[in-house]
Image 1 (tube, rainbow, N blue to C red):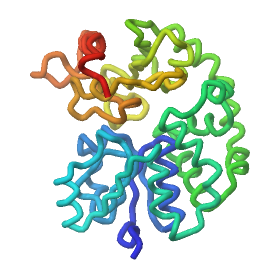
Image 2 (image 1 turned 90 degrees about the horizontal axis):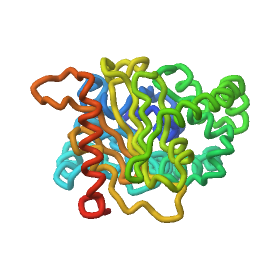
Image 3 (image 1 turned 45 degrees about the horizontal axis):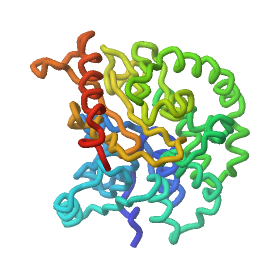
Image 4 (image 1 turned 180 degrees about the horizontal axis):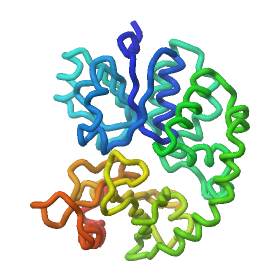
Amino acid sequence: MSPLDNITRVVADSDLDGLMAAAVLKAAKPSIEVHFAHPALIRAGSIDHLIDRNTAICDLPFHENCGLYLDHHQTNRPTKQQQILFEQNGGICHWRDTPSAARAAFDLMKDELDLSHLEEIMPLVDDLDSGGISLSEFMEDGPVIRLSRSLSLKDKNHMQVVLNQFAEGESLDNIVASHQERLSKLETEREAQTELVRKNTTIVDKLAICDLSETGSRSNGYLVTALAGSDAIACCVIHGFIDGTIDNPNRQALGASFYANSFLDEENPYDLSKLATLLDATGGGHANACGCRVQPADKSREMLVETDKDYNLQKWLELWSKRDTLMRQ
């Protein structure tokens, strides 16, 4: 019996890890339809209509109504009681402590079909998602790293094209070549992106704070920490718009992502997810990479105001200042 026997739909995160996890499942069962999302949509119940016992969820928060749950984030892991109840009701839980959700999917399905066409990219997916990429690899900005940056809910058609290419067994070289124009444009734009990040980053108590709010731009932690160097052991990237919403990829809700500086020789001793969950109960991720939405200082209102960002940042910095006693892993 295959874990995909009853699965007709996949809901996956909209990054390279989520896409590759979905590609593994679609390679095993080509008739599966794939929808891309992000954690806030799951937590807010915005896509509950897509989730039932015929749905596999990949690289996203746990949902009790799905049929197959596949993930690797510590804060998404269902409790023992949740897992027991989920499995008693017919669900399959494949949460694994792997470097990526794609690796968890690969391990789940590798005995059912030939996945050798994915073996070349899997180590890079693992490294990108777990902080294993080296500084030189990141600064080189190779084609696969650029391909990962090209994935966004702003262009779902592009994501579906890339998904199908991997699922149907195209070689990595051919996939990269087919998107050369898009990847070349990203290479050209990186210089401007680097300058924007540099301009909007300040370092406070070994935490690099990159405020990209209201710019429409985003950055991963790799670029921020690469620029900060040894002056920062972690970073906070603020992005989105004060009037943004979780379901509008072109004007996203105001949020923050936290990343350890994986380019340092020493391992990160702090659980950054404590920052992500400090004010936002729906925040989370890994100890080394996580995120949340900016919350109103006044809990009696839902809409954000101008001062809320500073309030959140102040609270994060207060906790960060006590990291040796309150945030140790």
